[in-house]
Length: 326
Image 1 (cartoon, one colour):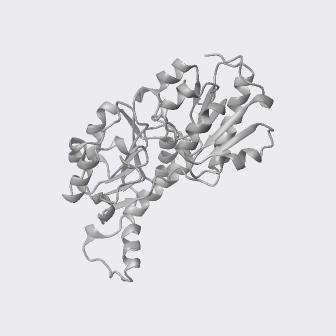
Image 2: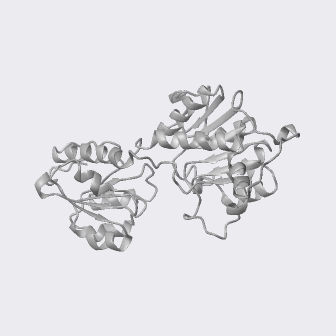
Image 3: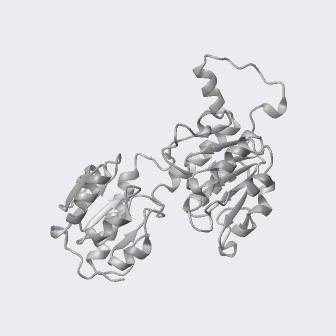
């Protein structure tokens, strides 16, 4: 898709829409001279979208905004994940779309590694003990002690930027890395072995830790279901830094309650925020972070780097965008 009629910088209006990130302030620091607006709530996004040539947004986006946003030509996603966007609707309205893939790859990989270490070193239970001023005595039962990463097998589902970075971290801990990807013939990407997504159940029984770092697609929705959980070791840990819907959440809760697997660390859940009524909150073998794996002090500037590059490409009438989706 070409866009030869994209406005010049002096005629451009950008709408930044996010509840927390300081996108407008960081963009203003670039001194581009481009007019821009910041909104923090969905109602304000709906109200101001008709003014915008460009919208920079993530999970606040709703596809029913498109018909009323008559000037809109480009949406730069703040997030790497893009399952919230209806690609066919974007094509039908002639609106370009690009993701922020890669901006938080290092942060998410570090977070996943941190969760892995936290579960094995029992940092989460240590924090629980601290809140009760309880000094846990030495543990005599070997299987209940803290564990080491060295020599363990990790299965990483998704070998994109995050999965590749995580694979390097795991190799630094002398772990055996099995990668799972759609096309295992395209390269190992730092893993010791690579299998197709369809062969996941064949490698899960070997895993001490399973890390989900894949996009949410039709193929990955419900990928970790009751059958998958039953194939895992009873000592296995599940880490999810992908999307909540990659996991069958009721099946996971049941597996954790019945000790089909030992523990889980979840940065994402099916419903976010996680409802207060969810059993996951009170489970001692669950560590929850509130979808913060991708948060980093450099996030806004990393996204703006992509935005500015894509604005330049659009103004030059180039057909290819960085991280182009539609």
